[in-house]
Length: 488
Image 1: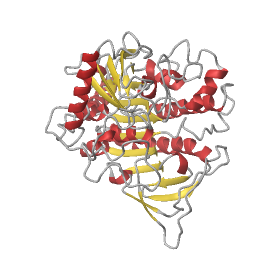
Image 2: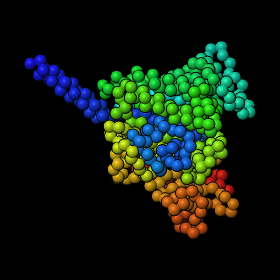
Image 3: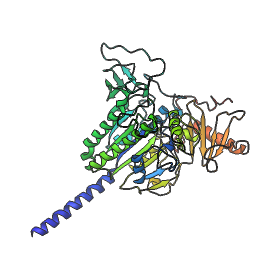
Image 4: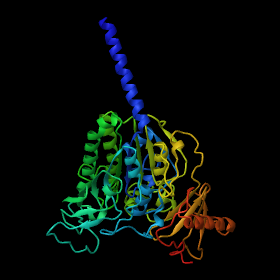
């Protein structure tokens, strides 16, 4: 009788565990999106095998446990615009920001009436948190009796003991920040040149050495996962957006990593960036929630100039992989980025896809996963790639993508054809076929004038409609000049 009862107990226990897992999956997975800053496609071993020389064991592990997307892109080749596109599913160039990035103290780029991916998850019962770099504008209010610092002049000194401070001291309030744009919790900083001014929620709480930022982000996200794990097991999932401070300048690897790669500070900082991915994976595993957590690792644009140090110290290493260009450019090296996705409960290990995607597509993909119909004024340029993560064909895959560079110049890609509206020498347009010429070496514009004309017309239509997806036409926030810096 006792044996029977024990058997029944274990059967019931096993059934309960299986039921809990199935219930959690049905209610939606936990979601973690880690966004490196200025990390090139070729800086990950799993993405450029035989060439990449910087050890990236954590992202390699993620790739082994999940899926590599070989044709993933940012909408812009610089920081703020990409973050806007990721959070809103809308092209950055539809806003007032027509070139470069947001500065400290500028008004929020995401307007109050604009819903973000954070709102999407909140409305489906998720707790949402951001750990890291915002760089989309804040309104600041000085603490009582405090004075605003003078604006910094010249280039900041990138050393371990440097402070890169906001003009606003400790105690200053942050208005219209992440916790008003779809996030329940925020720990981080505005942008690289004010990284020492640490923000929690809606207030600057302290000033740290810049070298402390990345380790502190790891501590904070780890504590968060520990705190939310039990709720996640009971059908209360979370969404973490973790925009890292690295390997963007200031290049400040901490003591644990400095000298670890023997390839210079930048390589050490990339290695430390990879470690942050491992911290997240370890936290999920020790809490027993790795199986039903969808995690993505990507970057906000291509590799910056600091990466040349690695190419010099490690011949054969190529920070942009086989691609031309780096951060800031319209070449694929400026905006084709690492994109590795893992969800052990659902996604086949060691898989790969060449499905074209833009980071802003993550919004529509998560909406489809959660069975949410997006309104016409949300995610206007976001296209779901959900079937691709399950190894299935996408019914209406993305065929067209528009890119923007640091100077506000445009390119448009359709299939393998890519048109750049930038002048090099006497040529005002450049046309490449990426399947035959991934390195963008041979301009075919003169050979295929009809294709140039066709792509220009398509680009004009996507600008004029205020959207690139089916739905009611929308308005851009500012006039769009396709040729502003091209010399036409």
